[in-house]
Structures are given as C-alpha cells and as structure tokens.
Image (cartoon, rainbow over all chains, first blue to last red; front, side, top):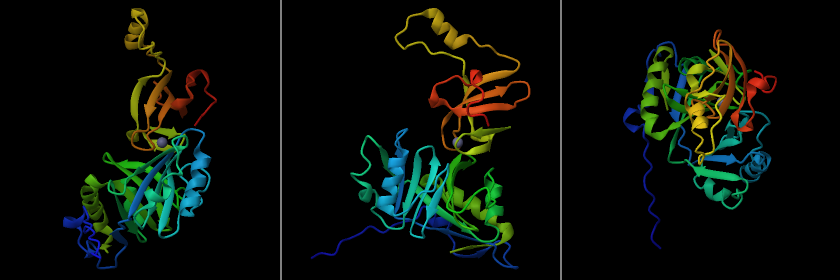
Length: 200
Length: 97
Ligand SMILES: [Zn+2]
C-alpha cells in the first residue's frame, strides 16, 4: 500500500522566527516566545438560550468542563476552551480533526461550528515578564486575580484582533489572524527586547 | 473613557465603535411614510445630558450594545446588550455598569 503523503505544514512566522536568545538577555531571559501550532482551532457559537447545551457538548467531545461566567475557560495541556463572547467559545486541540469529532452533535437548532484551524495562528508568551510585555500591547488587566487561569479575553492590538487565554500563572496563548500573524509576531519580539527573550 | 461591556467588563473606548443615536426608530423597509423616514434619517434630540446610544464592542466580543452616555461629562450611565430590544435610557437600572 502506498504511504499517505501529507503536505508539510508551514508557519506564517517562518521568515521572522529565529530560535535562540535575543534582546537584553545578559541578565537572563524573562519571556519565552513560541508558536504552539495546534492542529485544530474551532469557533463554536450557541443561539441565545442554547448555551448550556453547547457547553455540555463541548464537555462530552473534549472532556473539558467550562466554568461559569463570561470569559471562563480551562485547558489541560493538549486541549483548551474559553469563552470569547456571549455564547461563543474557542476550542483548541493539539491534534487535527477536532471539527469532525463535533460533527453531528452541534445541530442547526443549537448553534454553529466554524473551523479556523487554518485561519488563526497561536503564539505563546511565558515567563516572569509575560504580564509586563502583554500589558504594553493590550489595554486589559493581566493580573492573576483579574485574569484567572484558563480564562479568555477578546481584545485587539492596533486593529489586529486577538483572543487571549491564560494557560499558566505566567503564560498566555494569543490567537491572531494568520494573515496578520507575522506582523504581530515581529511587534511582540520588539516589545520583548527590553526584558530579554528566547524563541523556542 | 471606559465602557463596561456586559460580557467583557470595563474596556477602553478605543475598542468600541459608535453606531449612532439609540432613539431612532427605523420604519418598516416597505414603508412609504416620508415623515417617518425623514425622522429616522435626520431628526436628532442632540441633548446636553443623558443620551441613548448604540455602540459595538468591535475590538472585543463584537456585541452590539445600548449605552446611555452623558454628552457633557462622558459618564457611561448604563450598558446592556442591544438584542434585548428595549430602550435603556428609560430603563436605566437594567444592566447598569
Ligand atoms: Zn465585549
């Protein structure tokens, strides 16, 4: 049997993605930047009144239980989910094929599923100065009590729309339009120079 | 100026897009009542004080909001999802930020 030929995945960040330490890192690296390259990025939306049913479907398919409240979210290392608007959720999986796993369960009466796996790029910033660098980009409160672990936020940086999930005490995952990802990445690298950054 | 989105919480005004006077009542599309269309397109209260407005949280959750803003002080008196359909200036307790 012929071996299945899979196309090689390319990153939109490639020409500007330079692994190693950069900027002011003589006294240590205070943030680590990376592209997480999840295989699946989905946007799920419930019609008004159908939110609880959609949340239950997300739990059944992904095993992730969404906490109550606006912007609530949770991640388990390989999968993540968070609310980014009323009745709307971003669901991410390291593996490809999550859209197929939802197929059939989100009926037209409940809501919609949009597969954005090729439409968004996921960038991770981690380290003791992650909050500091993020606060230079976005006019929202990144302190842990205001932006708890797992929670999601919708905001933007110079008209580049961004969804942000706190995936660790000092770690954030940023989802941006893939077509703007390289520009955003360059800006994030510049913003990280003062604290010293490492690209992994 | 901060606007408290019912979903996202307090956010800088730069994340929002003004979508006009919230007092307008759009005639039915098939209406040929010229006075009603004229009022919809041109008549504005232009108050010095509390004003019903429609805003969109375009740089956030993208919800359309009914906002009551004081045009003198820029104080935001209330915010609510627009899809409720009610007029928030007359119903200020609901969704008060
Ligand atoms: Zn919002």
